[in-house]
Image (cartoon, rainbow, N blue to C red; front, side):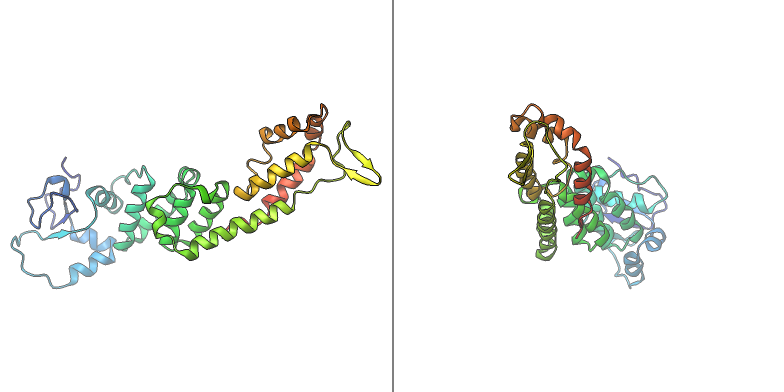
Length: 280
């Protein structure tokens, strides 16, 4: 397939990394990008410096060939950002990572800025929060790392599939994330104390001067603590499905009504947990 960057007035050729590539202009068309020095120089300090250096006499002196280590797909994505055409569709986190690496290498700051926003878009944060965090920390993108660290609270980070992106995460960055999960989980579980005004018409009351909570509470408290230690967010523990299970386990016909009547208590408890520190 012919490259979309195949200008007749090109004065430099970019040769993408390819199994078919050689040091001449004889590589397949898909691996060669016929572009303009002035546009590359304007967009990239890296290329501006390169073009200002004395150039050796080439075997084909008409148009110089510059070999780059990026694939054709990555190079085309960069050029789509640089040239006045539609931005490239970045469909996967793998592709985003490759293009971001290249944009940093060639000092394309405006491309990096565009990719930073895309990196923390909901589709990537929901599906791959730990990978997003690893990519952000690798490139010292502190704000994106903070956003991604919050998104990781919804997953069990000790049970995530291994991925190449995780190879680049530093021990320091990973430890910060573990500390966030640990400290938030500890603080959240300490908040799981029932209010005296939460009652069940059938199974709780005061005995010998001691308040006895409804039967559903011990089950909820135990399971909520376990869930919060794995995923210290309120997404699961205050869901109707999670609460209903405690009503079933209680074995009391009035506990379901008690849980529904305690909506004010759950709202307060949820707000308290949600207000805990949620980012590195």
